[in-house]
Every structure is written in C-alpha cells, then in structure tokens.
Length: 386
Image (cartoon, rainbow, N blue to C red; front, side):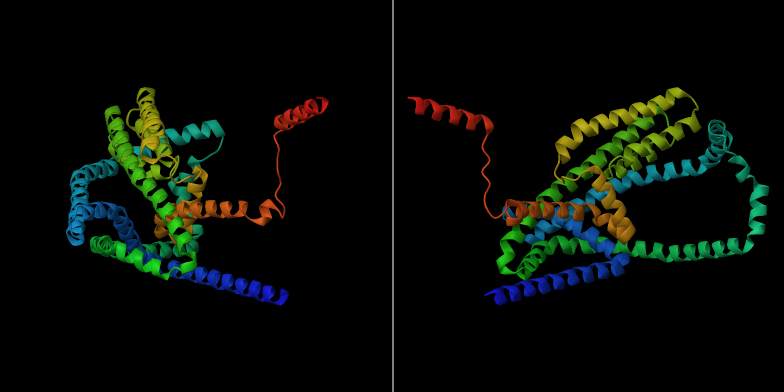
C-alpha cells in the first residue's frame, strides 16, 4: 500500500516537473519572438474586447460575419475619427515643442541649474562648459569613438525597427479582423485541450479572469481618454503652448499609478515656468492637477474601473516595469493582463490552501465565543441549583 502511494507521489512530482519545463520553454519562446509578437497581442486584445459586441449582435439573429463586419467597421471609424482629429493638433504641438527647445535650454542653463547650485552647493555648470567637454572628449577619444560607433549602430538598427513598426501597423487591422471573427472558435479549440477532470476548474478561473480583466481594461481605457482630454483642456485654458501635448501624454500614462499625475506636475510646471516664469500659471497647473485627481478618484475610477483588477498600485508598477525589462514593449502590453490573471490564480490557491489539511490540521478545531460560553456555563449552574 505504501509502495503504491510512493509511486503515485513520484508520478505526480514528475508531471509537475514536466509542466514546469513546458511553461519555462514557452516563456523562452515568447522572449525570443517578442519583437514580432506585438501586433498579434494587440490584435488579440482588440478581438477580445470586441467579441462581446459581436455576441450581442448574434443574439439578435445577425450572422457572425455580418456582426464582425459591423463591429470591425465601427472600431475602424472610431480610430479614424480620433486620428483625423488628433494628428493635426499633435503635429502643431510637436512643431511648437521643436521651436521652444532653445528657450527650454536657456531656462535650464540660466535659471534651473544656478538655482540648484545655490541650494546644494554643487558646481554643475562647470561640467557643461563647451571647452571642458572638448578637452574631455580629446582625452578620452577612444571611448568617445566607441560610444559614437554604438550610437551610429543604434541609429541604423532604429531605421530597420521603424520599418518593422510600419509593417506592424499595416498588419494590425488584418490580424484584428481575423481574431474578431474567429475568437469563439479559438477559445473553443483551447477548451478542447484542457483535461476533462480539470475542465470545470479551468473554466471557472477563465470566466473570472475574463470578467476581471475585461471590466478593468474597458474602464481604464475610458479613464485614460477622459483624463487626457481633461488635462489637455485644463492646461490649454491655463495658457500653456504645449498644454495639449502634455495633457494627452499624461492621460495615456494614467494606466500606471501615479505616473500620469507626476507627469502633469513635472512637465506642466516646467512649461509654465519657461513660458511665463510666474507663480500664477504654476498655480494654474496645480489646479488642473488637483481637479484631475478629484475627478479620477471620486468619479471615474469608482464608476468605470472600481476594484476589478484587485491589485495594489505597487504591484501594478512592478508588473509594468518587470514586463518591460523582460520582454520589452510586448511585456508592457501583457503586464496588466498577466498580473490580473495571476491575481485570480492566487485567490484560487488561497482558497484551496484554506481547505487543505495543512491549514486546518488533522482534526477540526471548534472555536467558541467567550460571551456565549460564559452564558452557557451560568445557565447550566442555575439549572443545577434548581
């Protein structure tokens, strides 16, 4: 009997080792293919987000192909309208930024650095003197030549990377259409691969992950859009030339906790100081920041996002940074979805642990309320006296 139990334990251990090796192998393949997987991941996310709308149209007796065409067309029209409205504005903002760079440089060298030197006692400007920089380059010309070669190599690689990005942009609509059309088929085929004795558990976890992640992503996208427009409008009303650009970027960065507000405070404050140099416009940036935080904390997040993902802000920041470090842009795309799914799995693991013998022990422990036990003792004592 004991021998059979030992053999079963060894077999279970080897199965776990095989599954672990398979998981590590998949991660290694994803790491190798990360440069070409980004459009597939974005297209899969778009297909997954659009599938509920396709299912609703199918429920109204519209064919799958027609529903997919309608949803895909609506998504394309929305993206096209956004591009038509934003591209001219962003082009003007970029031109303003390029023309303003000399002013920012003069403010940085003539105002910011002297203030820092006066407060800290550090001699920073001397390191930025052109003659000193020329002497340093001449004394370390070999290292400078190596650095220049590295920079030129990076620029040449960046040209190929730009071509790759253009190819991905062209490929993205095609992949999105096919993911949207075949999403239910893909999910069904994956479900057929799940072992039957684990199917109910996997289905439960998949549905929970889908609900958590779907609610979070749809809500977070709306929060990013609304906050971006709110920040851009607020900074434009303050009078900043780069207010629209700073506001839109801050809105996009709100998916990482505290990064969007920090961007508003830092770059909005610098833009106000460079352009106006007074405390009134700096205070205006502070008002825009405060209003945005109030709207996000008390209106947008409770209504649109809530606590669906169930992750602490530090966990979200770590997930995004770890994903970017390990897999680059692909890792940043997958960071929050993977973190949400892992959080669901951790909750399930905690539930199983509390039901296990390791947590509960071999014998159940009955915990009596102190007040109830004392009342019971008194009633028994009175009954004995009677």
